[in-house]
Amino acid sequence: DGVEVELWGECYNIEETTILDPYWSSTSGQVIPPEIGQLTNLTGLHLIDNELTGEIPSEIGNLMNLLFLELDGNQLTGEIPSEIGNLTNLISLKLSGNTLTGEIPPEIGNLTNLHRLTLNDNQLTGEIPESICSLTNLNWSSSWSNLLWYSQSYIYNNQLCPPYPECFLNQEPFTDDNGNSIWDEGESFEDTNENGYYEEDYVGEQDTSNCEEECSDSIEGDLNYDGIVNVIDVVTLVTCILSDNRCDICFDINYDGEINVVDVVSLIDIILDN
Image (cartoon, rainbow, N blue to C red; front, side):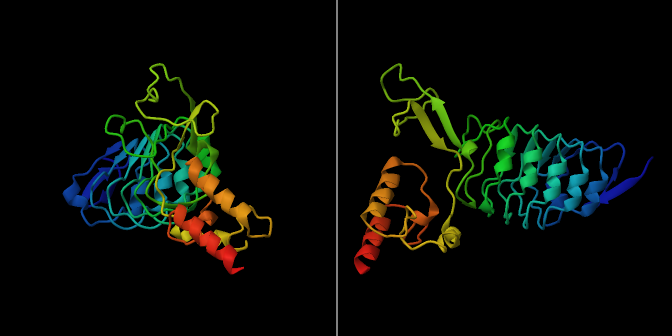
């Protein structure tokens, strides 16, 4: 019979259980118990849309045979445990559509076998760790795609602060064979830097309104950090807006979470007041 562990009112054989996909009604409103870390032969943990609450237990890092860890579409809170970096065999890690907070643990860079990572639609904060660029098998996208959802990775709709890692700025050479300004994936492009590359920021939409403190050490409006607020800073701001690149959060002069012409007006007011 072997040793068993009880999870959500059901008993599972520790040695024989390799896939865990419980019926959602048994887990609704429940937490992921730390005892789940005893199922060390698990290769698949599928808890999608199971109405789970509470935090992801650190014991999940014991499941080092896992290939699929899918916890998306629940009501999970708290931080992503750093122990998740132990799961180096993972192919798919899906945590989207929860209420996860805190920073993305740098240990996520250990998961070099990942082919899919979804962190979108949470409340993650801080900067994206540079270690995430070690996950070279991921195909990032800045928005959901009905056609490619099964292969894309997402990080949009969080509260992540710039600067963002370089691997989130895609640069793909393009050819406009038909002369219609349509890239080979069906998206229109602009060669804003005139360098022959189609550029897209894969971070997607982020609420950066809580990133203001990063600018506290500099003079308000001194966007080029020369110690003086003048017309050069206005030019710097306008250039960033027109380039359609993601601007430094310190360029959000009026702290409304958006960088646009309103910030130009606010910057001019600062200069005139001085």
